[in-house]
Every structure is written in C-alpha cells, then in structure tokens.
Length: 143
Image (tube, rainbow, N blue to C red; front, side, top):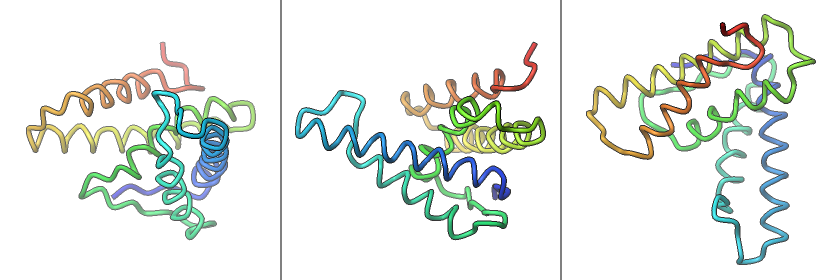
C-alpha cells in the first residue's frame, strides 16, 4: 500500500490537470499526425488517477500496489516534474513527503520486478530513470 497525503494529492491533482490539458491540446491540433511520443489515451490514464485523488480530497489516498497498474505508473512518474514546477510554493516538508512517496513507489516497483524475474527492457529503462530521480529528487540537497 502507498499512502498519498492530502498536500501531495493537491500537488498531483494540479499537475495532472495541466498534463491532461496539454495532451488534449496536442490531440486537437494534430488530427491523425501525432508526434511519436504522443498517445491519445494517456489523457484518460492520467484522468483516472486524478479522479481517484479527487475522490479522497482532504484525506489520505491509499493506492494498492499489489498489482502493476499503468495508471499508477504513468501518474507517479510525473511527481518529480510536478515538484520542479511548484518548487517555490512548496515547503521542505512537502518536498520531503513527495520524495518519500515517490521513493516508496519506485522501491515497490523494483521489488516486484525482481520477484517476478521480469526482463521487460522498457520497464527496466523506466525504473532506472525513476531510480535516478529518487537519487536527485528536486528541491533536496542531493550532494
């Protein structure tokens, strides 16, 4: 289980709302000629996670990590970027909380991959990137 407190939920709701708007704008302007890194379904994936956070507004959101979820994975991967965009508005306690949640999520994903013996190359690449972001989490003295 992963617990996302209200302060981090608020940050993620705001960030996901902006990302959904960005993706929808791309979808509207590109017709069928999408950029290679664009998937029109991503906005729906992010919206699903955002709705879960909104349902729990003002209280902890509990994410069950027993099974891999594309919704969780895509949304959690954006957390460091949300911190960067809002760095001047976040307290050190908020940044530390976001880092702790992100690190817990990444540790769970790594453990699950090791337990299953998965050799999925794209999953490994994603996890290596996420691990590097844990080490250099924005807003913390990472020396």
